Every structure is written in structure tokens, then in C-alpha cells.
Length: 313
Length: 208
Image (cartoon, rainbow over all chains, first blue to last red; front, side, top):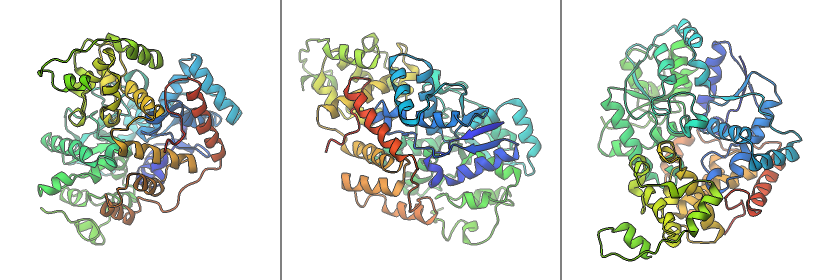
């Protein structure tokens, strides 16, 4: 498929590795991603909080720019961007005076209105199709045997269900299937679509720390060694707000993007560089499982010490 | 604050509340959310991940709207603590989009220049959107700088910021889009639409 790609602001910095790994694995599977030219921020968790028109107009500009590219579909692998674009798309398609007013605004600004000729997709929607899963399995050179994970979808791919969900909003399975295709063992748990606290992480860090601690404990209780997520905000919170575990002198829990699992299984060499951006290094876990072959073992980072923060064990 | 007393301490000596329908009618008209349908099943509160940090749990906010307790509702921390995870909305048997009601109430508070019970949450959203208005994209260092100046939380998370920086997760320079004139127009028109009564929201003017 030829897909237009809306990277989202986090792919410029905090989640650069998610953007790079998404592009890398999609290209291995033969999909062509083209970046939407001059895309803008979707408004994330802030636009709707302060301005209900901005919430739709910001993503609408991207949708119009994507439509002009005339490809098979538009995508963003950032959950927040996907959510914002999907909400805007469906709001306009539902019609009514407010939708019409917004579309007129965007037309007066960009010289084009949103026609709704193509649908906005999340890459998981594409990857969880049976023929894609088959393709993933055929590309695996290093099955992730022994890696036990739970899949953590978060809010943005599931809610509001009637607008954004492309599968069961309470028990989604698309990422489970993709992770299983890489050879990892996906454990069952009940916390797939719980909230990580999102942008409360700055103004009310202690709330997020509590939510994250619960999620990590439940993941371990389910028999997992790590969490896998499709959301840059969830990963940032899960990776950086493990203070409660630290205070109890418990080992930290690593978190992966699902695309990194795919890249590891595909044997892509850049995985090492991506995983080094994590505050909680997955290196000791991967070493224990003998999966660090794709993770180049040089420098102090590989030992879990040095530049990576040393956690009490 | 009789509403708050009764709402937070239901077992205490009863204060009489005379139900008054104007607030519910206003919320229903502005948001399209049928708040009067709520029969108090408490599924919203049961599934709310942050209810323990709120002074009024979600179903109480809806009930107080039904009763017309404007002051209590608008002064509560709840509307700001809500993380918009939308679990309440997804599970409400009466199809009330509670997170949408919370967003509307934020707009009412700001439009009236009222007290923001959780000012740091507002500071965050405002700093984020101001950054987007400036560059067309978010940029963490600019946003964090603005947020710290506003909220005077200069020393929070400094160590973590350093670790993020060391791992290349906080780019020094922002990415500025070519169409930022279009973004400025989007911000301006969104505010004008809000003022002319299209949908809820405070507009984008800074209230400070």
C-alpha cells in the first residue's frame, strides 16, 4: 500500500525511534510511506481541553494536505495523532452546521476543503490483517522466543469507540497478533486500555506515577517481563515515571514500541540505537534471553550500567 | 458552597438544595450531552482512573449539574484532573460524553475569568498550545520553559530532563513549519468561532 504518513511532533524528538522503526518495518513489508508535506501538530491532549474548534481545525489541515497526496490511505502511528485526525475526519463526515463551518474555515485558509475521499488508518489496522501477519512471520529471522510481554494499547486507539476503535475497544487484539507473529509470548491481562495519565505527567506527576506503578505491577503479575505499546505518550510515561518501584528498590520494567519488536525479529541493525534512548534499558532482559544478538554489545550501555541509570537490584 | 458540603459529606446534617434546571439546560444546549438522563449508576466513577484525586467524583459532577449547583461544579478540581481517557463516555449507559462536559466546563470557567482549581494543569495546556501557535509543531524545550515560567515549578523534573537530553530525546531546536501563517489563522478563527457561539471553548486568547 502507498500511505501518506503523519509522523507527529513526538517523532521529532521524544519518540524519534518509534518513527524510524515504523518506517523501517513498513518498508520491509513492502509498504510505501510518504510524509505529509509541512504537517502541523494535531493539538494532542491540550487543544480539546481549551478550545473545541481548535481540536478539529488543527488535524483538519493535515487531513486536507494528506488528501491532496491522493494515496491509498492516510496514517499516523502516534496514537494521539491518529485519535485527533480520526475525530476530525468523522466530525466532518457526520455533517451538520458546525462541521460545515469548520470545513469552510479550512477552505478559506488552505484553498481546499476536506472531501473525505480516503480514510485515516492506524498502522496496526493494516498489520493485523491475516495476509500482513503471514508476511510478518515470513520475514522473521530471529524469533523473539522467551520474551514475555503484555500489550498496552492505552486510550487513544480505543476511545471514543464508535469513532476511533477498529476492533473491540475493551479487549483489542491487533497488537497481540503482531507481537505473537514476531515469536514473543503475549500474556493475558486486564489492563490493555487503562489510562496512563497522559499530560498530567507534568502538572501532577504523582498521579501518573501511581497509575504507571499499578500498570507495571499488573504486567509483572501477568507473567510479563516488559510492556509493548503503540503510543509515544504512554511509553514516555511508563518509561520515565517508575519512581515508585525505585523507591521500593524493585527493578525497573522495560517498555517497547511494537515496531521495535518487529525490527528485532526482522534483524534490523538499527534497533540497538533506538533502544538506547530508553531511560529503562531493556539490555539486561534481552541479554538474559539471548536476544541481544541484534543488540550490538559494545560499551557500558550493554551491561545495563554506565550511561544508563543504575537501578538497585 | 452548600452543594459541596452535601455532595462531599452525604451523611452530614442535610442542607436543603432546591433543584434548579438552568445549568443542566445550558450544558445540554451547548454540548448536546443529555446530562438529565443520568440515573446515577456510577459506572463513570467506577472506571475513572483518576477519581481518587478529584474533589468531586464524575457522577457527582453530573448530579450537581442536574441540581443546578453552578458554584460547586465550577470550583471543583475534577474538570481539570480529568485526563480525558474517555472510559466514562465509552461505558455510560445513557450515552453522556462526560469528558466533553468536563471540557465545556473548563471553557465556562475560563470565559468567566473564574478560579482555576488546578492552575498547573491549565498552565500546561496553555504552554503547549502557545508553542504550537508559534511553530506549528510542539517543541518540548520551548513548552517546558513556558510552563515552568507560568507555574513557577522551576526545579521539578530537572534530573529527568537532563537524562532525556543526554539520550537525544529533547531536540534543542524547534521544527518550524512553512505554513505557520495558516496555523495563526486557524488559532484566530477558532477563537472567533467560539466567541460567536459555535461549540464550547474559551477561544485561544490568553486570559492572563
